[in-house]
Length: 349
Image (cartoon, rainbow, N blue to C red; front, side):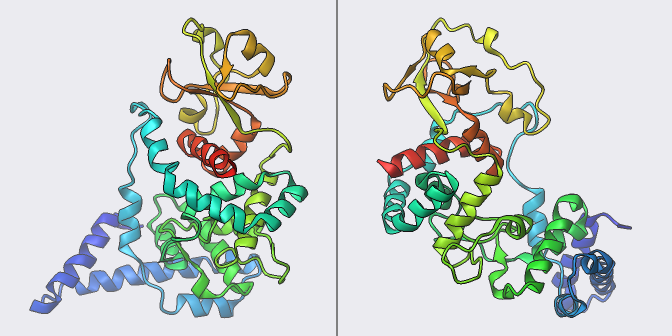
């Protein structure tokens, strides 16, 4: 882009603010911005055609599409610390996200969908309660799925350019969804492109959305059956292991030598997440070190797990299996993954 985005948007806002008093100079900036935006959209046609997206679909979308400055503001002002910012304790997050209301609604959704959940679990090995917990975490069981126009939001974020490598493929995937027959009215969601009950990105929808009710459509926006089947399919593709728990809450002896348990790898993905985990050991090895499961029950001795102490020494810790890593694949956050596992356990009780 010839100008910084901040300068372009500033010109747009000045134009709006001064139009009523007859200031003419900002108006060309607005026109230039829209021209640049349309030029960017037109530059996508070769890629879109290569994906099989018709010109008719592109013409119907590009004709009146305009940038949305709000999504740029949201993208540029996301909360979160830098690479060395302190990580807070997990307990406040747990209180907010695994609360009585969410557990109660989860149990209602669990009971209402038992027949289809049991069928999906039998087919995939993904536990019923895990599907329900994702549904609850992502959209509070469908109560809020977002109201941003996905195509407009993703087109704006891709055009802005700061994270084009992320947003441009998602824009193209959304156009492919439209070309495949998904109604434009369905293509709404979060400002960053997540949509439907499972909050799938468009590229994930194209790869993994499933028809769970047999009507020939993968409707993750209004069909709980389709949403739950799609969530299960996501975990299957992420390597979920049938019959293995996501993790075990444990008490850790005060004298545990944590330095000797440090992981020896440098994770290329989500290092602030994975660097908090110990090295992998068997459940039998953890038991010999004096860890005690809060439930009193140990998984199989040969099962591998890593240790995470999200609130520090002396508080509840967790031995986490490979299935926990599958939850992290859905959202690479220890707080998110722990809360999904704990909500799933509470829903099933």
